[in-house]
Image (cartoon, rainbow over all chains, first blue to last red; front, side, top):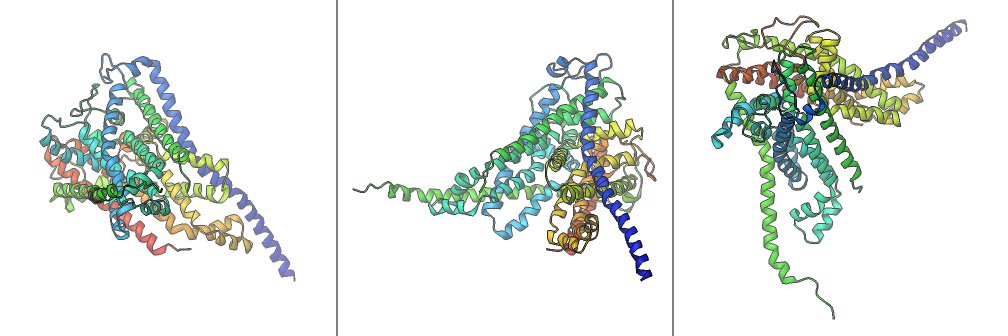
Length: 308
Length: 296
């Protein structure tokens, strides 16, 4: 009996230790979970504070409305986001002209036409495209796509916005395809059967019934693709050069917002210079654009979702 | 009198056309699906032919050099391994802990929505912005300089959302009857998580983490933003040494390719090494998933 009492005491001690652990663990886990919140706070703080510093030195109007971008001009540097914005806009438009039609038709093929076996083979291969590092796409655009395009368009510069735009589109195809396919395959079979019972062909069923029923998910995939294109860095950095003139000529070199950040950080703009602070003003613009696109995509897929 | 709404003749007249359109479109859709595969094949062909003859033992084991023939990537390889050494444990601990907190403790309500919205938004932030965060906080504020630790932590923050989401999915896949059985035998919540839920979810968590790591070693932009040098640097031997990684090496050789075609070959050869490394990681992830994953 005496032994069992001491055992009970030991047991009791153990369980009080256990109790402490029970209380301690959620706190530790919460601390870990706060890391991601702190990251967001950190991003916002650094961007806002340094951007504020930038606007104490450069007037708001110059940054948003002038067209001269010469950050490293020693005597009289000027800062304007417009040339960077136009390059980002153009590369995004070109990328989406590639990614939307090919991504959507790939999604339709995989979800509506392909046999199970074909889908099991094709889908993973298409998704490999999404796993290739962007630096490899940059290399591909610069050393392969641009020379090929130069044979077709002789006036194309060695660095231009067309080639990285196209390659960026190829990179985004899997994203558009797989998100759209998810939307298409969540349309219930009964709707397709209904259309086919009326004598519609597969194509008519797809265009008139399945795509309209899945349209919110499809549009959301386009918007996410746009966000991805805006934030893409290495492809444009390598293949589009660093020309900061405001132009809409896609055969010329242009610098996107992301490429500007790479150029200035890898260059010799020391901390505290205006060029250094301009990084953050550009980055916050980039951040706001991508965040807005991501929220828009979420809104579209939530607001216009049809429940079946 | 019954009115005939359907003009049968008109309908039959249109049928061949509609069927033809259906057939043509099917071909077009297939072509467009194959477009991705063709580009992938061209890309691999381009990289492999460019690198042909450049990948040998000397290339893999030599340090950087301005002499293309003697240049190697041992520095970049060891830098990439160092990066994995930091990103793996850091994201594993923080990511899995976050996922456990959200899935096993908070479960639902505003707190969870808040954390999940935050993670989803972070996942959409361009990687270059993470680079600026690392530059500001780790390199300048904490005065680390662009060293292994700064790069590793920046990359960890970048892939953390991916690890959290995939770990959450792994935990969610563990059926609740396992937890209930454990509670029923008198186990506490943490005992249940540690001895029942985590072991059941581990293979799937590992798979997600390896895939995130494969993403991390392919990222270039954030590390360039940290100010990783293109120049000759000694092999890193600790957390506070400067370093370079494979994709950054590819970047500097690619932009020099205009000067000298050999640099394009060096870049292509480095890409092949990077892709092989990623392929190994992805295969490992798939192997782990197939071998250890239990179906409940």
